[in-house]
Length: 368
Image (cartoon, rainbow, N blue to C red; front, side, top):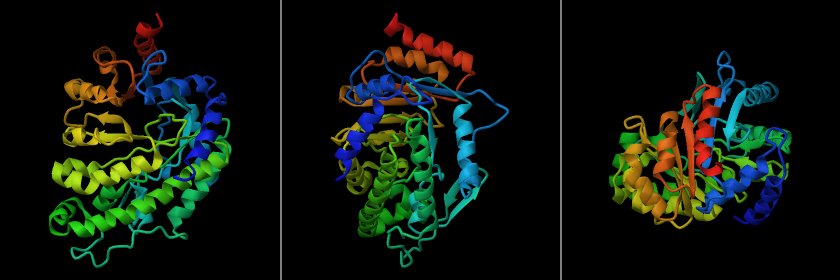
């Protein structure tokens, strides 16, 4: 992207200054820059947070998004009632739910009970498929611009802007066509799928650039849903649809777009979601601009310890690792993998005091 160098300069300046809600932000930023480069500044990256007020659940606040003042006030209260431990950074996420591009490109987005989804509508002959462009007057596009700018203006010098889940071509198509239908389309009309992928990429590029442009222009730093800082723009390409398809279709149709996203931005961490997606790891590791892999073991095999061989192979290929894991596996994972370029994120956090104790145990081998 043409603006990448300018954004990097601004992000680097932001990373050198403490934040109102994170005095040690410069040290965390340095640790994460080392992580991106498969290096070890002092210890591996530790990401965890706990709600200090279980009586007030933290949600996406989707029901408040049309009232920017009420929405931002609730999000700020959410942020301030979290106990952030290790390298977890304060942020407000402009969260629309999963795969926002599905709505921006023609799907009907429905919001219910703090989640959202888009309805599949593309017919079998694809005669009603959209043209895959974002309309300037689309209500969700206007809301995205408005809320991102509002958060960025409030965040500058205080906390970070966290972007929504835009989604990429495979998961946009999955949402708007349906899983079984899209699997058939890969066989019956691959040219149609390829044309849609190319068009969706251009809209993804536009939306992604707008998030950085609106945030950086206000002097605010940007992170994505994984919570990782980068002093260069980065992206989190994903393809949850790859759990349903074999290597041939993945590598022919979807891997080139993943590589294009990563090259466009210059720095990327791929979201590898579950055991069925893990079959594609060797192909992903051949993409030069994917510097890191984030691995979620998945509901069927919640233990990352079962995947140590693959995780070590990722490290041996010179890629950084972010592993989602329950608290009781953190120490064994840290002992089983190289500390350089290793990050661990705790899912389903224990109570705040227990989390602090675990972080102490995690850090002790590196700090004495």
